[in-house]
Image (cartoon, rainbow, N blue to C red; front, side, top):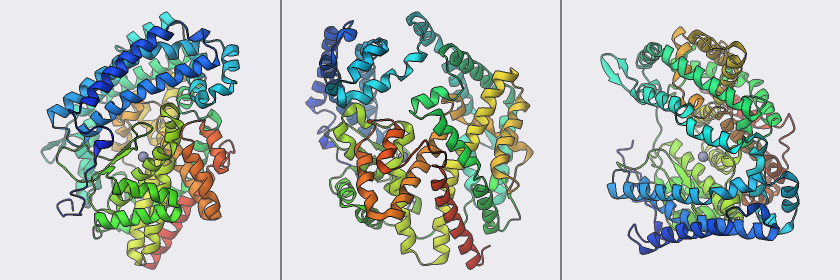
Length: 597
Ligand SMILES: [Zn+2]
Protein backbone atom coordinates (compact mmCIF):
# COMPACT_ATOMS: atom_id res chain seq x y z
CA UNK A 1 0.00 0.00 0.00
CA UNK A 2 2.88 2.35 0.72
CA UNK A 3 3.74 2.25 -2.97
CA UNK A 4 0.39 3.89 -3.74
CA UNK A 5 0.07 7.63 -3.42
CA UNK A 6 -2.11 8.86 -0.56
CA UNK A 7 -1.76 12.59 -1.09
CA UNK A 8 0.50 12.84 1.96
CA UNK A 9 3.65 12.84 -0.16
CA UNK A 10 3.98 16.62 0.03
CA UNK A 11 2.93 16.99 3.65
CA UNK A 12 6.08 18.35 5.25
CA UNK A 13 6.30 20.57 8.31
CA UNK A 14 7.55 24.11 8.37
CA UNK A 15 10.07 24.73 11.18
CA UNK A 16 10.23 28.49 10.66
CA UNK A 17 8.50 29.15 13.97
CA UNK A 18 11.69 27.86 15.58
CA UNK A 19 14.40 28.99 13.11
CA UNK A 20 14.57 29.74 9.41
CA UNK A 21 17.21 27.05 8.76
CA UNK A 22 20.12 25.22 10.37
CA UNK A 23 22.40 28.14 9.47
CA UNK A 24 20.02 30.74 10.92
CA UNK A 25 22.38 32.87 13.03
CA UNK A 26 19.79 33.08 15.81
CA UNK A 27 20.27 29.39 16.59
CA UNK A 28 23.95 29.75 17.48
CA UNK A 29 23.20 32.97 19.32
CA UNK A 30 20.52 31.25 21.43
CA UNK A 31 22.79 28.35 22.31
CA UNK A 32 25.67 30.54 23.47
CA UNK A 33 23.30 32.91 25.28
CA UNK A 34 21.72 30.02 27.18
CA UNK A 35 25.12 28.62 28.14
CA UNK A 36 26.50 31.93 29.34
CA UNK A 37 23.29 32.69 31.24
CA UNK A 38 23.52 29.24 32.85
CA UNK A 39 27.04 30.11 34.04
CA UNK A 40 25.81 33.40 35.41
CA UNK A 41 22.95 31.57 37.13
CA UNK A 42 25.45 29.30 38.80
CA UNK A 43 27.59 32.19 39.94
CA UNK A 44 24.59 33.93 41.40
CA UNK A 45 22.90 31.02 43.17
CA UNK A 46 25.43 28.27 43.84
CA UNK A 47 25.61 27.56 47.58
CA UNK A 48 22.81 30.07 48.25
CA UNK A 49 19.59 28.19 47.46
CA UNK A 50 18.93 27.25 51.09
CA UNK A 51 19.04 30.92 52.07
CA UNK A 52 16.52 32.15 49.46
CA UNK A 53 13.16 33.45 50.64
CA UNK A 54 9.99 32.63 48.70
CA UNK A 55 10.28 35.62 46.37
CA UNK A 56 13.95 34.88 45.74
CA UNK A 57 13.17 31.25 45.01
CA UNK A 58 10.37 32.22 42.60
CA UNK A 59 12.75 34.55 40.79
CA UNK A 60 15.42 31.84 40.54
CA UNK A 61 13.03 29.22 39.16
CA UNK A 62 11.62 31.68 36.63
CA UNK A 63 15.16 32.50 35.51
CA UNK A 64 16.06 28.83 35.20
CA UNK A 65 12.92 28.18 33.18
CA UNK A 66 13.73 31.09 30.88
CA UNK A 67 17.31 29.91 30.30
CA UNK A 68 16.17 26.38 29.52
CA UNK A 69 13.45 27.61 27.18
CA UNK A 70 16.02 29.47 25.09
CA UNK A 71 18.04 26.29 24.83
CA UNK A 72 15.11 23.96 24.20
CA UNK A 73 14.15 26.02 21.15
CA UNK A 74 17.52 25.14 19.57
CA UNK A 75 17.32 21.56 20.80
CA UNK A 76 13.83 21.11 19.33
CA UNK A 77 14.93 22.44 15.98
CA UNK A 78 17.98 20.14 15.84
CA UNK A 79 15.91 17.11 16.81
CA UNK A 80 13.03 17.80 14.43
CA UNK A 81 15.25 18.56 11.49
CA UNK A 82 17.23 15.35 12.12
CA UNK A 83 14.09 13.22 12.45
CA UNK A 84 12.94 13.84 8.87
CA UNK A 85 16.35 12.97 7.38
CA UNK A 86 18.43 10.84 9.72
CA UNK A 87 20.97 10.03 6.99
CA UNK A 88 22.07 13.64 6.47
CA UNK A 89 25.46 14.02 8.23
CA UNK A 90 24.97 17.76 8.75
CA UNK A 91 21.71 17.22 10.64
CA UNK A 92 23.26 14.41 12.68
CA UNK A 93 26.24 16.59 13.56
CA UNK A 94 24.04 19.51 14.62
CA UNK A 95 21.95 17.27 16.87
CA UNK A 96 25.04 15.67 18.41
CA UNK A 97 26.62 19.06 19.10
CA UNK A 98 23.43 20.44 20.67
CA UNK A 99 23.10 17.33 22.84
CA UNK A 100 26.64 17.76 24.13
CA UNK A 101 25.92 21.41 24.87
CA UNK A 102 22.69 20.34 26.57
CA UNK A 103 24.69 18.09 28.89
CA UNK A 104 27.01 21.00 29.63
CA UNK A 105 24.04 23.23 30.44
CA UNK A 106 22.51 20.60 32.74
CA UNK A 107 25.80 20.28 34.59
CA UNK A 108 25.92 24.04 35.21
CA UNK A 109 22.47 24.15 36.78
CA UNK A 110 22.38 20.72 38.46
CA UNK A 111 23.30 22.22 41.83
CA UNK A 112 20.01 24.08 42.00
CA UNK A 113 17.83 20.97 42.27
CA UNK A 114 20.24 19.29 44.70
CA UNK A 115 20.39 22.31 46.99
CA UNK A 116 16.62 22.70 46.89
CA UNK A 117 16.06 19.07 47.83
CA UNK A 118 18.56 19.49 50.68
CA UNK A 119 16.48 22.28 52.27
CA UNK A 120 14.90 20.86 55.44
CA UNK A 121 11.25 19.87 55.31
CA UNK A 122 9.91 22.49 57.71
CA UNK A 123 11.53 25.35 55.85
CA UNK A 124 10.50 23.96 52.46
CA UNK A 125 6.90 23.62 53.63
CA UNK A 126 6.85 27.26 54.77
CA UNK A 127 8.29 28.42 51.44
CA UNK A 128 5.89 26.29 49.38
CA UNK A 129 2.92 27.69 51.27
CA UNK A 130 3.78 31.20 50.05
CA UNK A 131 1.45 32.31 47.23
CA UNK A 132 4.36 33.91 45.40
CA UNK A 133 5.50 30.35 44.56
CA UNK A 134 2.08 29.16 43.39
CA UNK A 135 3.11 28.95 39.75
CA UNK A 136 6.10 26.76 40.54
CA UNK A 137 4.58 24.89 43.44
CA UNK A 138 4.24 21.49 41.82
CA UNK A 139 7.61 21.63 40.13
CA UNK A 140 9.32 22.41 43.43
CA UNK A 141 7.23 20.04 45.54
CA UNK A 142 7.65 17.15 43.09
CA UNK A 143 11.42 17.62 42.99
CA UNK A 144 11.47 16.85 46.70
CA UNK A 145 9.64 13.55 46.51
CA UNK A 146 12.88 11.56 46.30
CA UNK A 147 14.27 13.25 49.40
CA UNK A 148 13.45 10.43 51.86
CA UNK A 149 15.26 8.01 49.55
CA UNK A 150 18.44 9.96 48.91
CA UNK A 151 21.74 8.76 50.35
CA UNK A 152 24.67 10.85 51.49
CA UNK A 153 26.58 12.79 48.85
CA UNK A 154 29.64 10.45 48.77
CA UNK A 155 27.30 7.45 48.50
CA UNK A 156 25.34 9.06 45.67
CA UNK A 157 28.53 9.94 43.82
CA UNK A 158 29.91 6.45 44.25
CA UNK A 159 26.65 4.86 43.08
CA UNK A 160 26.47 7.12 40.03
CA UNK A 161 30.05 6.28 39.04
CA UNK A 162 29.75 2.56 39.73
CA UNK A 163 26.45 2.44 37.88
CA UNK A 164 28.37 2.54 34.62
CA UNK A 165 29.94 -0.80 35.44
CA UNK A 166 26.92 -2.32 37.20
CA UNK A 167 23.30 -2.02 36.05
CA UNK A 168 23.95 0.05 32.95
CA UNK A 169 26.71 -2.31 31.86
CA UNK A 170 24.43 -5.34 32.19
CA UNK A 171 21.66 -3.52 30.46
CA UNK A 172 23.95 -2.64 27.58
CA UNK A 173 25.17 -6.21 27.28
CA UNK A 174 21.53 -7.30 27.04
CA UNK A 175 20.86 -4.75 24.28
CA UNK A 176 23.94 -5.84 22.37
CA UNK A 177 23.02 -9.52 22.67
CA UNK A 178 19.51 -8.79 21.48
CA UNK A 179 20.74 -6.73 18.53
CA UNK A 180 23.13 -9.52 17.59
CA UNK A 181 20.45 -12.22 17.86
CA UNK A 182 20.20 -14.19 14.61
CA UNK A 183 17.10 -16.22 13.90
CA UNK A 184 17.46 -18.98 11.38
CA UNK A 185 14.32 -19.55 9.30
CA UNK A 186 14.52 -21.99 6.37
CA UNK A 187 18.23 -21.37 6.03
CA UNK A 188 17.75 -17.61 6.11
CA UNK A 189 19.19 -15.54 9.00
CA UNK A 190 17.07 -12.65 10.24
CA UNK A 191 17.23 -10.30 13.23
CA UNK A 192 14.76 -10.09 16.11
CA UNK A 193 12.58 -7.34 14.61
CA UNK A 194 12.18 -9.18 11.33
CA UNK A 195 11.54 -12.47 13.13
CA UNK A 196 8.81 -10.90 15.27
CA UNK A 197 7.25 -9.15 12.29
CA UNK A 198 6.69 -12.53 10.64
CA UNK A 199 4.18 -13.27 13.39
CA UNK A 200 1.93 -10.79 11.59
CA UNK A 201 2.01 -12.74 8.34
CA UNK A 202 -1.27 -14.23 7.10
CA UNK A 203 0.30 -17.64 6.37
CA UNK A 204 0.16 -19.77 9.51
CA UNK A 205 3.12 -21.89 8.50
CA UNK A 206 5.29 -18.78 8.18
CA UNK A 207 4.24 -17.70 11.66
CA UNK A 208 4.86 -21.13 13.18
CA UNK A 209 8.34 -21.39 11.70
CA UNK A 210 9.28 -17.89 12.81
CA UNK A 211 8.12 -18.65 16.36
CA UNK A 212 10.07 -21.92 16.49
CA UNK A 213 13.19 -20.28 15.16
CA UNK A 214 12.97 -17.47 17.69
CA UNK A 215 12.50 -19.98 20.49
CA UNK A 216 15.60 -21.83 19.34
CA UNK A 217 17.70 -18.65 19.22
CA UNK A 218 16.56 -17.62 22.72
CA UNK A 219 17.10 -21.13 24.11
CA UNK A 220 20.73 -21.01 22.99
CA UNK A 221 21.26 -17.94 25.21
CA UNK A 222 19.07 -18.87 28.15
CA UNK A 223 21.90 -19.15 30.71
CA UNK A 224 23.40 -15.78 29.77
CA UNK A 225 20.04 -14.05 29.68
CA UNK A 226 19.02 -15.54 33.02
CA UNK A 227 22.29 -14.41 34.54
CA UNK A 228 21.76 -10.85 33.29
CA UNK A 229 18.24 -10.84 34.72
CA UNK A 230 19.41 -12.27 38.07
CA UNK A 231 22.17 -9.69 38.34
CA UNK A 232 19.85 -6.79 37.59
CA UNK A 233 17.20 -8.10 39.98
CA UNK A 234 19.76 -8.28 42.78
CA UNK A 235 21.17 -4.87 41.89
CA UNK A 236 17.72 -3.31 42.16
CA UNK A 237 16.95 -5.17 45.36
CA UNK A 238 20.18 -3.85 46.94
CA UNK A 239 19.53 -0.29 45.87
CA UNK A 240 15.87 -0.39 46.95
CA UNK A 241 16.94 -1.63 50.38
CA UNK A 242 19.60 1.05 50.76
CA UNK A 243 17.20 3.77 49.67
CA UNK A 244 14.37 2.51 51.84
CA UNK A 245 11.85 1.62 49.13
CA UNK A 246 9.30 -0.78 50.59
CA UNK A 247 8.65 -2.77 47.43
CA UNK A 248 10.25 -3.39 44.04
CA UNK A 249 7.65 -1.15 42.31
CA UNK A 250 7.71 1.74 44.82
CA UNK A 251 10.44 3.78 43.08
CA UNK A 252 8.63 3.49 39.75
CA UNK A 253 5.33 4.59 41.28
CA UNK A 254 7.10 7.55 42.83
CA UNK A 255 8.51 8.64 39.48
CA UNK A 256 5.06 8.21 37.92
CA UNK A 257 3.54 10.26 40.75
CA UNK A 258 1.06 7.43 41.25
CA UNK A 259 0.20 6.10 44.69
CA UNK A 260 0.97 2.46 45.42
CA UNK A 261 -2.73 1.96 46.17
CA UNK A 262 -3.93 3.29 42.81
CA UNK A 263 -1.46 1.07 40.94
CA UNK A 264 -2.48 -1.97 42.98
CA UNK A 265 -6.13 -1.20 42.24
CA UNK A 266 -5.37 -0.90 38.51
CA UNK A 267 -3.58 -4.25 38.41
CA UNK A 268 -6.36 -5.95 40.40
CA UNK A 269 -9.04 -4.51 38.13
CA UNK A 270 -7.34 -5.63 34.93
CA UNK A 271 -6.70 -9.12 36.28
CA UNK A 272 -10.35 -9.40 37.29
CA UNK A 273 -11.28 -8.86 33.61
CA UNK A 274 -8.96 -11.46 32.07
CA UNK A 275 -12.18 -12.90 30.63
CA UNK A 276 -11.95 -10.14 27.99
CA UNK A 277 -8.70 -11.28 26.29
CA UNK A 278 -9.85 -14.89 26.62
CA UNK A 279 -13.16 -14.14 24.90
CA UNK A 280 -11.39 -12.08 22.27
CA UNK A 281 -8.90 -14.82 21.40
CA UNK A 282 -11.72 -17.38 21.17
CA UNK A 283 -13.45 -15.05 18.74
CA UNK A 284 -10.22 -14.54 16.83
CA UNK A 285 -9.75 -18.32 16.49
CA UNK A 286 -13.17 -18.53 14.86
CA UNK A 287 -12.41 -15.62 12.58
CA UNK A 288 -9.22 -17.37 11.49
CA UNK A 289 -11.03 -20.68 11.07
CA UNK A 290 -9.04 -22.39 13.83
CA UNK A 291 -10.21 -24.50 16.78
CA UNK A 292 -7.85 -22.69 19.09
CA UNK A 293 -5.15 -20.07 18.63
CA UNK A 294 -1.52 -20.99 19.15
CA UNK A 295 0.77 -18.41 20.78
CA UNK A 296 2.12 -17.48 17.33
CA UNK A 297 -1.39 -16.74 15.97
CA UNK A 298 -2.18 -13.83 18.25
CA UNK A 299 -0.78 -11.19 15.88
CA UNK A 300 -2.19 -12.75 12.72
CA UNK A 301 -4.20 -10.43 10.46
CA UNK A 302 -7.90 -11.22 10.37
CA UNK A 303 -9.31 -9.63 7.27
CA UNK A 304 -8.02 -8.58 3.90
CA UNK A 305 -6.88 -4.96 3.99
CA UNK A 306 -9.58 -2.50 3.09
CA UNK A 307 -9.30 0.31 0.59
CA UNK A 308 -6.72 2.90 1.66
CA UNK A 309 -7.80 6.25 3.05
CA UNK A 310 -6.37 9.30 1.32
CA UNK A 311 -4.65 12.06 3.28
CA UNK A 312 -7.50 14.45 2.49
CA UNK A 313 -10.08 11.97 3.82
CA UNK A 314 -8.00 11.29 6.91
CA UNK A 315 -7.63 15.00 7.52
CA UNK A 316 -11.39 15.52 7.15
CA UNK A 317 -12.27 12.61 9.48
CA UNK A 318 -9.88 13.70 12.22
CA UNK A 319 -10.78 17.38 11.94
CA UNK A 320 -14.50 16.59 12.10
CA UNK A 321 -14.03 14.32 15.11
CA UNK A 322 -12.19 17.02 17.05
CA UNK A 323 -14.46 19.85 15.85
CA UNK A 324 -17.60 17.96 16.86
CA UNK A 325 -16.15 17.58 20.34
CA UNK A 326 -15.36 21.26 20.79
CA UNK A 327 -14.47 24.29 18.66
CA UNK A 328 -11.36 24.64 20.84
CA UNK A 329 -9.95 21.24 19.90
CA UNK A 330 -11.19 21.60 16.32
CA UNK A 331 -9.45 24.97 16.03
CA UNK A 332 -6.15 23.63 17.30
CA UNK A 333 -6.26 20.62 14.97
CA UNK A 334 -7.08 22.89 12.06
CA UNK A 335 -3.98 24.97 12.91
CA UNK A 336 -1.84 21.84 12.80
CA UNK A 337 -2.97 21.17 9.24
CA UNK A 338 -3.19 24.73 7.94
CA UNK A 339 0.00 26.07 9.48
CA UNK A 340 2.08 23.04 8.57
CA UNK A 341 2.96 21.65 11.99
CA UNK A 342 2.71 18.08 10.66
CA UNK A 343 5.16 15.98 8.70
CA UNK A 344 3.27 13.03 7.21
CA UNK A 345 5.12 12.09 4.01
CA UNK A 346 6.88 8.73 3.76
CA UNK A 347 10.58 9.30 3.05
CA UNK A 348 13.51 6.87 2.96
CA UNK A 349 15.55 8.21 5.86
CA UNK A 350 12.78 9.55 8.01
CA UNK A 351 12.55 8.36 11.62
CA UNK A 352 10.14 5.43 11.87
CA UNK A 353 7.04 5.45 14.07
CA UNK A 354 5.17 8.57 15.07
CA UNK A 355 5.52 11.26 17.73
CA UNK A 356 4.34 14.63 18.87
CA UNK A 357 7.22 16.81 20.01
CA UNK A 358 6.43 19.58 22.44
CA UNK A 359 8.85 22.45 21.94
CA UNK A 360 8.65 25.50 24.20
CA UNK A 361 5.80 27.58 25.56
CA UNK A 362 5.15 30.20 22.92
CA UNK A 363 5.83 27.80 20.06
CA UNK A 364 3.42 24.95 19.25
CA UNK A 365 4.29 21.23 19.16
CA UNK A 366 5.08 19.35 15.95
CA UNK A 367 3.65 16.00 14.82
CA UNK A 368 5.57 13.39 12.83
CA UNK A 369 4.16 10.25 11.23
CA UNK A 370 4.53 8.26 8.02
CA UNK A 371 1.03 8.21 6.59
CA UNK A 372 0.32 4.94 4.75
CA UNK A 373 -3.43 5.27 4.21
CA UNK A 374 -4.19 2.27 6.42
CA UNK A 375 -6.92 2.65 9.02
CA UNK A 376 -4.25 2.44 11.71
CA UNK A 377 -2.55 5.47 10.16
CA UNK A 378 -5.72 7.56 10.52
CA UNK A 379 -5.92 6.66 14.21
CA UNK A 380 -2.21 7.39 14.64
CA UNK A 381 -2.83 10.85 13.19
CA UNK A 382 -5.69 11.35 15.66
CA UNK A 383 -3.48 10.04 18.49
CA UNK A 384 -0.56 12.38 17.84
CA UNK A 385 -2.87 15.36 17.33
CA UNK A 386 -4.34 14.58 20.76
CA UNK A 387 -0.84 15.02 22.20
CA UNK A 388 -0.58 18.19 20.13
CA UNK A 389 -3.77 19.64 21.63
CA UNK A 390 -2.53 18.80 25.11
CA UNK A 391 0.75 20.58 24.38
CA UNK A 392 -0.96 23.69 23.02
CA UNK A 393 -3.45 23.92 25.88
CA UNK A 394 -0.84 23.30 28.61
CA UNK A 395 1.63 25.83 27.20
CA UNK A 396 0.55 28.52 29.69
CA UNK A 397 1.85 26.32 32.49
CA UNK A 398 5.37 27.06 31.36
CA UNK A 399 8.17 24.68 30.51
CA UNK A 400 8.45 23.01 33.92
CA UNK A 401 4.77 22.36 34.61
CA UNK A 402 3.48 21.55 31.13
CA UNK A 403 4.96 18.06 30.96
CA UNK A 404 2.85 15.34 32.54
CA UNK A 405 4.21 12.21 34.21
CA UNK A 406 4.05 9.05 32.12
CA UNK A 407 0.78 7.99 33.72
CA UNK A 408 -1.07 11.01 32.28
CA UNK A 409 0.96 11.47 29.11
CA UNK A 410 -1.53 9.52 26.98
CA UNK A 411 -4.67 11.23 28.27
CA UNK A 412 -5.39 13.39 25.24
CA UNK A 413 -4.00 10.99 22.64
CA UNK A 414 -6.10 7.99 23.64
CA UNK A 415 -9.13 10.26 24.01
CA UNK A 416 -8.61 11.64 20.49
CA UNK A 417 -8.28 8.13 19.12
CA UNK A 418 -11.54 7.17 20.83
CA UNK A 419 -13.31 10.23 19.37
CA UNK A 420 -12.06 9.41 15.89
CA UNK A 421 -12.77 5.72 16.25
CA UNK A 422 -16.38 6.25 17.25
CA UNK A 423 -16.80 8.55 14.28
CA UNK A 424 -15.33 5.98 11.89
CA UNK A 425 -17.55 3.31 13.36
CA UNK A 426 -20.67 5.45 13.18
CA UNK A 427 -19.97 6.22 9.52
CA UNK A 428 -19.53 2.55 8.59
CA UNK A 429 -22.64 0.52 7.88
CA UNK A 430 -21.06 -2.51 6.20
CA UNK A 431 -20.96 -5.23 8.92
CA UNK A 432 -17.69 -6.78 7.65
CA UNK A 433 -15.93 -3.44 7.81
CA UNK A 434 -17.43 -2.60 11.18
CA UNK A 435 -16.05 -5.90 12.41
CA UNK A 436 -12.64 -5.06 10.99
CA UNK A 437 -12.67 -1.70 12.78
CA UNK A 438 -13.69 -3.29 16.08
CA UNK A 439 -11.07 -6.00 15.82
CA UNK A 440 -8.31 -3.42 15.27
CA UNK A 441 -9.51 -1.42 18.24
CA UNK A 442 -9.72 -4.52 20.46
CA UNK A 443 -6.22 -5.63 19.56
CA UNK A 444 -4.91 -2.20 20.59
CA UNK A 445 -6.82 -2.34 23.87
CA UNK A 446 -5.53 -5.82 24.67
CA UNK A 447 -1.94 -4.97 23.79
CA UNK A 448 -2.05 -1.77 25.87
CA UNK A 449 -3.85 -3.05 28.97
CA UNK A 450 -4.01 -6.82 29.44
CA UNK A 451 -0.68 -7.71 27.94
CA UNK A 452 1.08 -4.97 29.92
CA UNK A 453 -0.52 -6.01 33.18
CA UNK A 454 0.35 -9.67 32.57
CA UNK A 455 3.94 -8.52 32.01
CA UNK A 456 3.75 -6.51 35.21
CA UNK A 457 2.71 -9.71 37.03
CA UNK A 458 5.75 -11.48 35.61
CA UNK A 459 7.98 -8.66 36.78
CA UNK A 460 6.35 -8.76 40.18
CA UNK A 461 7.02 -12.49 40.46
CA UNK A 462 10.69 -12.32 39.42
CA UNK A 463 11.54 -9.30 41.61
CA UNK A 464 9.87 -10.82 44.64
CA UNK A 465 11.18 -14.27 43.70
CA UNK A 466 14.77 -13.02 43.59
CA UNK A 467 14.29 -11.30 46.96
CA UNK A 468 12.86 -14.34 48.74
CA UNK A 469 14.25 -17.36 46.88
CA UNK A 470 17.73 -16.17 45.88
CA UNK A 471 19.12 -16.67 42.39
CA UNK A 472 16.45 -17.90 39.96
CA UNK A 473 17.23 -20.79 37.63
CA UNK A 474 16.45 -20.30 33.92
CA UNK A 475 13.57 -22.72 34.24
CA UNK A 476 12.14 -20.77 37.16
CA UNK A 477 11.91 -17.66 34.95
CA UNK A 478 10.19 -19.80 32.31
CA UNK A 479 7.64 -21.14 34.80
CA UNK A 480 6.85 -17.69 36.19
CA UNK A 481 6.45 -16.33 32.65
CA UNK A 482 4.09 -19.08 31.58
CA UNK A 483 2.05 -18.69 34.78
CA UNK A 484 1.61 -14.96 34.16
CA UNK A 485 0.62 -15.52 30.53
CA UNK A 486 -1.68 -18.44 31.24
CA UNK A 487 -3.49 -16.39 33.86
CA UNK A 488 -4.38 -13.86 31.16
CA UNK A 489 -5.05 -16.27 28.30
CA UNK A 490 -6.63 -19.20 30.14
CA UNK A 491 -7.26 -22.05 27.73
CA UNK A 492 -8.15 -19.64 24.90
CA UNK A 493 -4.61 -19.83 23.53
CA UNK A 494 -2.45 -22.92 23.23
CA UNK A 495 0.92 -21.91 24.69
CA UNK A 496 3.66 -24.11 23.30
CA UNK A 497 6.58 -25.39 25.34
CA UNK A 498 8.83 -23.11 23.33
CA UNK A 499 6.88 -20.02 24.39
CA UNK A 500 8.22 -20.51 27.92
CA UNK A 501 11.45 -18.71 26.98
CA UNK A 502 9.83 -15.64 25.42
CA UNK A 503 10.28 -13.46 28.48
CA UNK A 504 13.95 -13.24 27.71
CA UNK A 505 14.00 -10.70 24.86
CA UNK A 506 11.67 -8.03 26.26
CA UNK A 507 13.75 -4.88 26.77
CA UNK A 508 11.48 -3.12 29.30
CA UNK A 509 12.21 -5.75 31.97
CA UNK A 510 15.89 -4.91 31.72
CA UNK A 511 16.06 -1.23 30.85
CA UNK A 512 13.04 0.16 32.71
CA UNK A 513 11.84 -2.11 35.53
CA UNK A 514 8.21 -1.56 36.44
CA UNK A 515 7.53 0.63 33.41
CA UNK A 516 4.91 -1.44 31.59
CA UNK A 517 1.86 -0.84 33.80
CA UNK A 518 1.91 2.86 32.89
CA UNK A 519 0.57 1.99 29.42
CA UNK A 520 -2.49 0.38 30.98
CA UNK A 521 -2.83 3.23 33.49
CA UNK A 522 -2.87 5.92 30.81
CA UNK A 523 -5.13 4.01 28.44
CA UNK A 524 -7.80 3.15 31.00
CA UNK A 525 -7.66 6.59 32.59
CA UNK A 526 -8.37 8.18 29.23
CA UNK A 527 -11.10 5.67 28.33
CA UNK A 528 -12.78 6.42 31.67
CA UNK A 529 -12.94 10.11 30.74
CA UNK A 530 -14.26 9.20 27.31
CA UNK A 531 -16.99 7.04 28.84
CA UNK A 532 -18.03 9.92 31.02
CA UNK A 533 -18.17 12.15 27.98
CA UNK A 534 -20.34 9.60 26.17
CA UNK A 535 -22.72 9.47 29.12
CA UNK A 536 -22.77 13.11 30.12
CA UNK A 537 -22.17 14.80 26.78
CA UNK A 538 -21.22 18.48 26.40
CA UNK A 539 -21.05 19.14 30.15
CA UNK A 540 -17.78 17.15 30.18
CA UNK A 541 -16.11 19.28 27.50
CA UNK A 542 -15.18 22.20 29.76
CA UNK A 543 -13.68 20.09 32.56
CA UNK A 544 -11.81 17.98 30.00
CA UNK A 545 -10.23 21.06 28.42
CA UNK A 546 -9.34 22.33 31.91
CA UNK A 547 -7.63 19.03 32.61
CA UNK A 548 -5.50 19.44 29.48
CA UNK A 549 -4.76 23.08 30.32
CA UNK A 550 -3.47 21.95 33.72
CA UNK A 551 -0.68 19.98 32.00
CA UNK A 552 1.52 18.43 34.65
CA UNK A 553 0.91 21.13 37.25
CA UNK A 554 -0.24 18.64 39.88
CA UNK A 555 -0.28 14.94 40.70
CA UNK A 556 -2.42 12.60 38.57
CA UNK A 557 -4.79 12.03 41.49
CA UNK A 558 -5.42 15.74 41.94
CA UNK A 559 -5.71 16.43 38.22
CA UNK A 560 -8.20 13.57 37.78
CA UNK A 561 -10.56 15.43 40.11
CA UNK A 562 -10.92 18.20 37.51
CA UNK A 563 -12.93 15.74 35.41
CA UNK A 564 -14.69 14.35 38.46
CA UNK A 565 -12.70 11.14 38.61
CA UNK A 566 -11.38 9.60 41.80
CA UNK A 567 -8.25 7.53 41.25
CA UNK A 568 -8.25 6.37 44.86
CA UNK A 569 -11.61 4.66 44.35
CA UNK A 570 -10.79 0.96 43.91
CA UNK A 571 -13.70 0.70 41.47
CA UNK A 572 -12.32 3.49 39.27
CA UNK A 573 -10.67 1.26 36.67
CA UNK A 574 -13.74 -0.85 35.96
CA UNK A 575 -15.25 1.84 33.72
CA UNK A 576 -12.55 1.79 31.06
CA UNK A 577 -12.59 -2.01 31.13
CA UNK A 578 -16.36 -2.03 30.63
CA UNK A 579 -15.85 0.10 27.52
CA UNK A 580 -13.53 -2.59 26.11
CA UNK A 581 -16.06 -5.26 27.11
CA UNK A 582 -18.76 -3.47 25.12
CA UNK A 583 -16.60 -3.26 22.00
CA UNK A 584 -15.95 -6.97 22.31
CA UNK A 585 -19.65 -7.76 22.71
CA UNK A 586 -20.36 -5.79 19.55
CA UNK A 587 -17.61 -7.62 17.66
CA UNK A 588 -18.98 -10.97 18.83
CA UNK A 589 -22.46 -10.02 17.64
CA UNK A 590 -21.17 -8.84 14.25
CA UNK A 591 -19.12 -11.99 13.78
CA UNK A 592 -22.25 -14.06 14.37
CA UNK A 593 -24.33 -11.82 12.11
CA UNK A 594 -21.85 -12.02 9.21
CA UNK A 595 -21.54 -15.78 9.66
CA UNK A 596 -17.84 -15.50 10.46
CA UNK A 597 -18.18 -17.00 13.88
ZN1 LIG B 1 1.15 8.63 22.52
